[in-house]
Image (cartoon, rainbow, N blue to C red):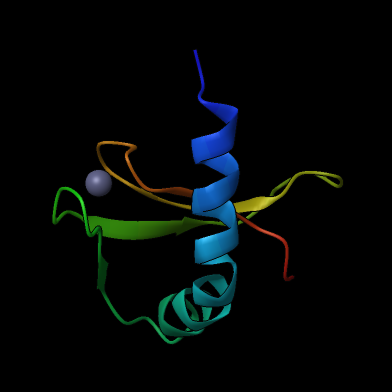
Amino acid sequence: MIDITQFNKLRARSFNDQKALLKKLAKGQTVLCQTCGQAISLNVAVKEGEKATAQCAKGCTHIELDVA
Ligand SMILES: [Zn+2]
């Protein structure tokens, strides 16, 4: 069960961070999850209509990247 309020709060807070995160990942820099400390990897959308995601190995960081 997802806590929508918390989810939205996290999304809003992370919105501005998404671009910075994507920039770092695009440059090949390692970004660590703030929760588990694992490296966050960028998963590029392979199909049309899919969103690229950035997530850590454990999945506690999972960001849909709205910016292409
Ligand atoms: Zn994590």
